[in-house]
Image: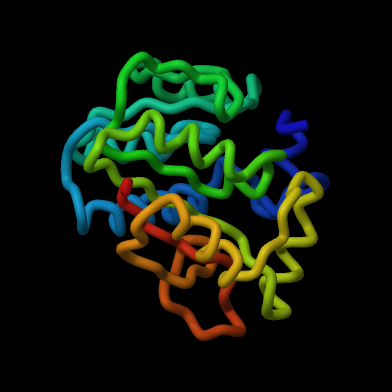
Length: 203
C-alpha cells in the first residue's frame, strides 16, 4: 500500500495521470496560494507530503517547510527531487517533531486514517496557539465526486461535505471553505466538485 503502484498507476488510487505530473504540481501550488491569503511566512509542516512538491513551493515562497509521509517510496522520491529539504517517513500521529508549527497542510490524508478524531487531536498538538491548518478532503455527493471517491481503494471514510465540516468544526474555527476540482479550480459548480478545502484556526 502507498508504494509505486499507488502513486504511478490508477490501480489503487485516483492518480490517473500519475502523481509526478504537471497537474499535481499546479494543484498543490494553487492550494498553497489559498493558504498564503492568511499567512505568508512561518514554519510549515506538510502531512502526507508524497513527492515533496508542496514543501518545495512553500520554501521558495517564503516559508520554512518540511514534510512527512507514511510511504517510504514517496519519501525516497522527495529526497531525490529536493535533497536540501527535510523529509521523514512516519505515520500520522507517530511523527514527533519536538516543536510546533505556524501552519500545517493536510491534503487528501485524513480520509485514509482509522481514527479521524485522534488524528485531528494530534494535528492540533503540533500547531502553535495561533496556528492554521489547511485540509483538502474528497467528499461524497455528485456523480463526479462519487466516481473519484470510489476509485481510491484506500479511502476509509467517504463522507459528505456537511459531515466533514461538522467533524472539523468541533476541533477548529473554520475560517474559509472552498469547493474544489482536483485542487485545480475552486468554488466550482456542484456537478464538478471533487472535494472541499478548509482553512482552519486552532481554537
